Amino acid sequence: MNKRRILLLLTLAAWLVSVAALADTYTVLRYNDTGAAVQQLQTALKQLGYSVGSADGKYGSATEKAVRQFQQDHALTVDGKAGQQTQALVYQLASGSSSSDSTSTTTSSYFSGNYDKLEYGSKGARVTLLQKALNQLGFSAGKADGRYGTGTQQAVTAFQRAQGLSADGKAGKQTLQRMEKVLAGEVSNVTPAPATPTPTPNPYGTVPSRTLRKGYQGDDVKSVQTRLKTLKYYTGKVDGKYGTGTMAAVSAFQAANGLHADGLAGTSTYKVLYSDAAIPYSETVVTPTPASTVPARTLRSGDSGDDVKNVQTRLKALGYYTGTVDGKYGSGTVAAIVTFQTQNGLKADGAAGTGTYSVLFSDNAKEYTKTETAAPTATPAATPSRTLRSGDTGDDVKSVQTQLKTLGYYTGTVDGKYGSGTVSAIVAFQKNNNLTMDGVAGSGTYKVLYSSSAKSASDSSSSGSTATATAPDKSKIKLMYWYTEVKPILKGKSSIYVYDPETKIGFTLHLYSLGRHADVEPMTADDTAKMMEAFGGVVAWEPVKFVYVLLPNGQWTVATMHNVAHGGQSIKDNNFNGQNCVHFLREMAECEAADPKYGVTNQKALRAGWKALTGETVN
Image (cartoon, rainbow, N blue to C red):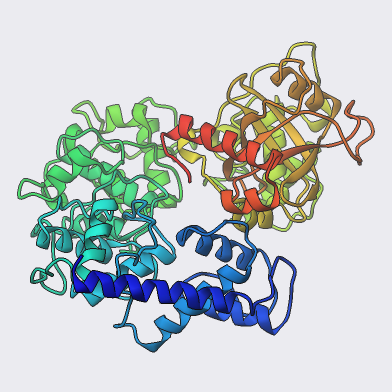
């Protein structure tokens, strides 16, 4: 054993003795404790990179979660209580970290024996520790903020290359142990790469390592947006958010470059996107052809993007459109589409879909012919010309509210504001008239709403067998967290609509109370019958059912639920003596601490359902 190793062991032994001595001086702190000792603990944890919220001296759920994470990171008993050993180690490390960012532990216990893999997207104190080590060794990871982004990934890759390790940019056991040896001076620190290394230089940007889809965020999304902007497919803001605009731009690029136009950015798309062979947008619109310009989605009023430009360009060439080719599907584009559809023997609904594209982008498309009378419109004058959604305002919203009020679905004020009450009324109308229940007022809904065959609210009837409901578009279903995203929407709202993908049955639930989950009760006896049929007539707490939920703002998300009546109730004539529960997505650590049994059961079932639906794993 060399002298350095002996010195390190002696230092470690002395530290353990000091921790043991200090341990006797601390009072155990736990959830709901308050005071200066709690505030001191919170300050030290924040200094070490753990999120406790405000250092307010209140030992709440955030502090408990931070303590649990610290205990897990340092191989202590994970109980969320700040005992003597936990506090001694917190203050020992905080004292060492506050002296200088450039001074850090240089023993082989730098990562406290925790070698669980860290990779792009990881967050927390262990990432902060990794970033500090990389910066100390000269491999710049940028600010030690606890977020494993592109900078940290590149720094890890540079370190791995310098040490002759497999350069995959992931900090696994081999990489972390080698880093400890270098910090301890047991292994030479090979001359580091430049401060901002580029693992795989590409003149067109950093090629992402994961498949990107709608809802994703990060630096890799920015890279894709930047490249698409250079090629003139993307006109939006480079904000790192993979939204509708980015998805449409990717789809247009794929179509123009002979790829499968699904709007997902994966390996095959990157291979062309980040190459000299990538065809710019300007080259695809000179001579429009179905292979390069036909949109992959149905376009309606309010949509925007390069695919809208393609439609406008083609309409302009045929003489139907006289406005600016700006990529905005406004009233001028709708009118041009209606006229084109009318003069070409198509259904004149103002929406551009597959049937319209098959004629519009063909040699058989008729050029515009001026007529003595205006081309017939798709719907009566009173019918709105645009698709209305939550948040829209205007006289057309008033028209919809008035019609819904006449049919008995809407009880609010006709104020021209498409709020939660209007969304709920539309969903109820769609449900009763066998339409797609999405809370959106579009051409399909208008066709029935403004017709003599529209069923009023009083026409609702139930039968012995439940008719299957229309499933929502899976691409419109979003994974949403209970406390930060779902609960704020439900506060003060009256109901949610639930669709069971297993039995294809839908029913409406009235919101009873909101806590760690939503307490609900079937809205009517018919809803109770449908819910029970969805559960096969079996009443039980488990297994819970994975379902899709339409929120009052028109957004679909996922949840789990049971059908056991318990507790109080507010609706007496729904044939359901009590209430039942709907569980939405929560952080697993928070759920394990606050709701360790049935709550965890629902969270596991929800995560399993989401993976089966999308292939994505939620931690």
